[in-house]
Image (cartoon, rainbow, N blue to C red; front, side, top):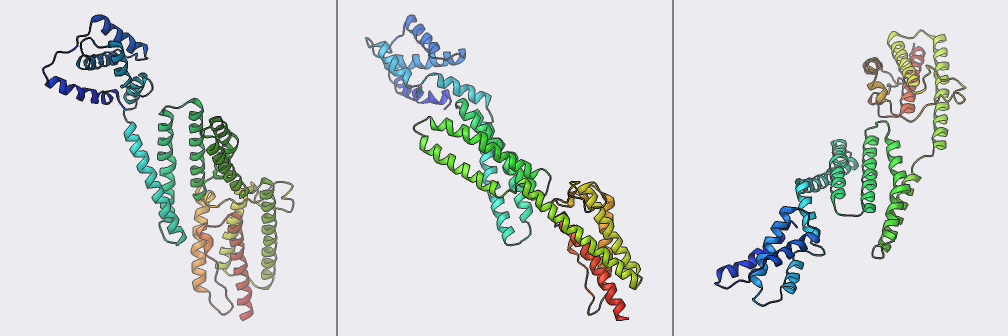
Length: 399
């Protein structure tokens, strides 16, 4: 509470005395000097605040102390009414308000953005479960408000509070972990690179820094000992459970090798089918254009992933295997590949409209949404090639 407001009740107490005609106690110069020195000795260093307190205390004593009364006892009772534990609280609160003029605005903004982010995230999750439009934008906005407005404001306000060093360290580490987790989830939803690294870094900070500091700082205090133990166990268990959902590097590598081997096998099947069709009939121009565009896009994705234009049987020894990344960033950075993808989409649409028959299979179009991982996109392109070749075989058989 600002010192001006804390003194306000005493100013009200003076009103009855001001309304009555009464002889007031007259303080001597020695008593005034005693009060001034005592105020300074109690930790009040601001000269202007010393003078204000001196005036208030003197007014209270002169209106409340009767002639012949015990000055020291009355002064002791009066000065203790100005604070809870120490007179220096008034100066600390005054400095705090002077240096943090926007404190209450920041606090109000923090509460507003926190409630808004929770509302947006809740609405986004509900829409996502119902497969309704608008879910993605609500979730992204909610995480953005949480990560870049609510958490930083909460962090700043917590640092400005009166607390010891251990509590400030806990606030700093906790704020960083919370921001890394929320930003990592945002990166994950947007398929941006570095999402796994951000989430893993935040979990490691929680396990090896935040939880130990939180535990040992609260464990020493008997009043918070039990709550600290329970909270630490819950946080540690939560982090471990999340880590169990994360694939180990060895498992990720094994899965990438298996996916690459599967893609390599599919490539052999496509090449064999192509050779067999070439020996039976000459492909039409449209089918050949679709096949070649699929081949060029596969070369583009393989080269973007491995640095090689083609994956050979020795890919494992060369560490040239496909990952589970999303293809959209590769196409975003390559206008030429994007044009080829658009051209393929137009050709496939035209092909599906022109080719018809009981045994003619329409070509897959979901690949153009880029909502599959690298391996899935490559397999979809291979499926388009296989369907084109099989349709060619059917058209030859029909003649």
